[in-house]
Image (cartoon, rainbow, N blue to C red; front, side, top):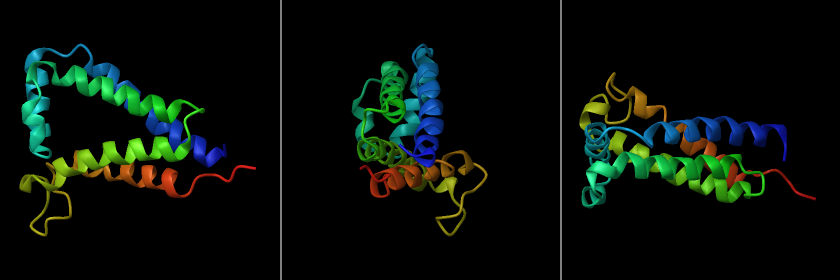
Length: 135
């Protein structure tokens, strides 16, 4: 694994695992808020129980971050997980008009925190399509 590949995996992986661990013990009212925000991007999430949504999201984040951190997981597979995760976050960005300026692309102040998740998609695609050469 190259140094650049390690950086592309370790830094987002550690941040995503940390985010997931932080969601495991959130109160039900916070979980409801996260559930409501997520349904703005992915309507099917409405069917999931809101009171346990944060815990389930945390477990998923730990899985994605863990795949990035585990050197035995191929970069293409870890990149696919990261791309899927990031794309889910981007649906929340694009499906809420308050997140973008009038052009529907540039982030508004409210959407800035979600717009930065586009980096996760870019990193995931990089890992999927430009993995280091193995001998």
